[in-house]
Length: 86
Image (cartoon, rainbow, N blue to C red; front, side):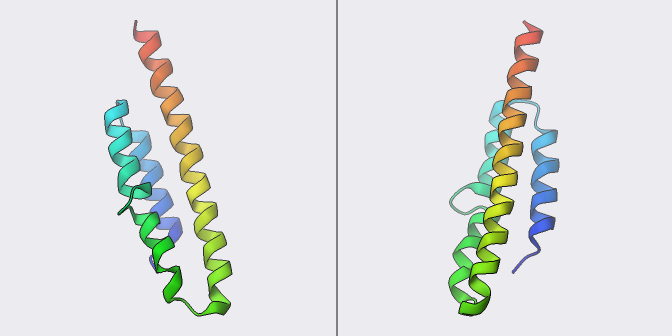
């Protein structure tokens, strides 16, 4: 299983680098979409031993929540910037 903190750090950097909402949605798809990095991690839970599954699932869900929160904040920041530019 790929290191979750690496995925989260990479996603946060990508979100921060997005200059518009289209780029942000593309970045979201890379991490949270159907074939995204975090979604792939969730799908791989079934391959883990039962004893590790709950802990790994909780870690993945926590990472997903962090990314969703960061995504929401970035969307707001982009909307504010667009509004200020007008």
